[in-house]
Image 1 (tube, rainbow, N blue to C red):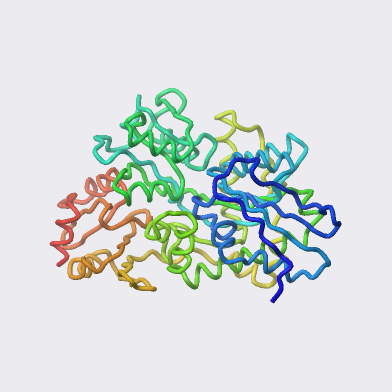
Image 2 (cartoon, rainbow, N blue to C red; image 1 turned 60 degrees about the vertical axis):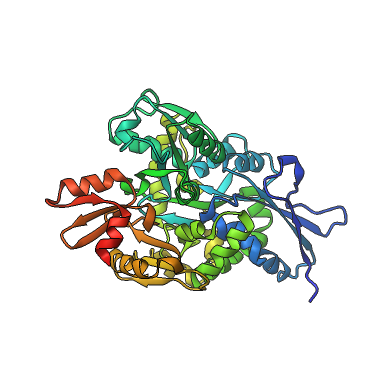
Length: 447
């Protein structure tokens, strides 16, 4: 079948000048280029980026418009949200996806420069904040956030991970502006700094903490879910683009919903598609995007997430990254409501799947779910050679983590996993007889 929607693909991570375009008529008067900025390795945006692109859903929706135009989709890949905002406010990107703190900066910059943007949907979220993690080197003696005083900490200033770091440090009495040396680095640079010893810790967003832990290059120091504050990524669109091309934006949001439904129905296949497109290990993608992963995907703009966004404004203001941001004016769910129709109200009321322990067997197209971490450990102990990955939820926050990277505690006959050592120690301190054990010991006890 002939398709009128044609993809003008840009290679991953090319410079800004490598590809461009806006939603305007071409020289022939009938071709419209829609430019989408996304972050391939920020994998809880995949339903508006990597997976969406892989499935071709947006192009199919544009093809179905039958409005006399030929559409080209120009996909531009970035490491963080900041350059997407810069290109949007320059009128060069029409639709972009980024985290909650960058979304607020996007709103502020758009307003300042007379190119207002609007939050039009959500990609992935975690209601407790588990999408961001602080990690240290594998051999580091740092055991808790309190140990970061006087240390060098790498993060991307203005990112969701930076917001987590600021909040978490303040909770333990550390001034993030005075008591640490903050290194403003892109995730890959920060990972290299941690490995090379020029940074003592790294605070980053998905998928970097999980990737480094999986590779044995880092261990968790702080689980962002300890904040118990929602964090999410979303889709922002230029207001002038939305007003001029509402049908195109609606087509994008319908395609995003299709990608979301595909991810929910085929989590293993979706993880493998994203892995193939990004070069990330599929096991890491599944940690975040799996059936019981850290991220829940839903395009609906839930009130809890809007409320959390409002709380984020004060953090950005204190860091002098923005002034006041009118969140209510920034949030515009009209387009996603229209795209989803009657389903929107139901999606607003749904939440994340219950936490569960999972094993991904080698060569399998499905994962196995277990009722408890101890039950998972018994299975792993008997079938270790056939296990591709094993995942367990933190006993207090519910954040999924790799079973062999978790901190294990024995408490009577119970075996409990934790993402970070400090969280495990808090549990041990409150339960007489409980103590931290190694993963190998946990496997022996389970079997």
